[in-house]
Image (tube, rainbow, N blue to C red):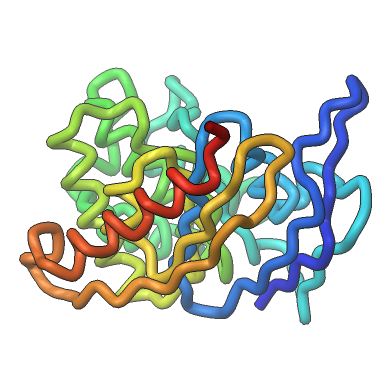
Length: 243
């Protein structure tokens, strides 16, 4: 789906955030970018989104159209004066679509994240987890080929985070959308991802590319293969971190 070939990113202040990143992102994968703070995970995500340009190297799409990419930031970034449905409708509105023609898609996106009954609710009346669900629905409403997520659950309590992880994993399984997900959490990466790119400290490099063999199922989080995957990721991170 996407080929990242020898990509480096140096900022105007001289900081080399990424150094010679090469990776392939296949259609339908759930890829976690896992690594310590400052290793360039979010920078790589912004390069994939086209929000930043590489200093060298290239990012290649076979085809790329408006609406191919959805982006979920760390903060829900909802318009406080708009209802949940209006917030989800916003990217479609910006493309010149009418409310009438997109209403089914908006309501379907809210239903996907379990908020069908809250279409008319304003952000002030929603919990932090519900606001993030609206943000995810807004990213999904255009049926993007690629969904980029920058630590969307980092600020949530553990109970809400576990629930949203399970819901997102189910949305991925049901839709087949390719997801690239930035996280600091080994447990989150092991639970969600079909593949984990472990990144080394700055300048960011792909230190390991590890495929998950964790079986699907309701007991996924307590399964032996999940525990083994957590250990594998932990050991890999320990090896790439400076002494």
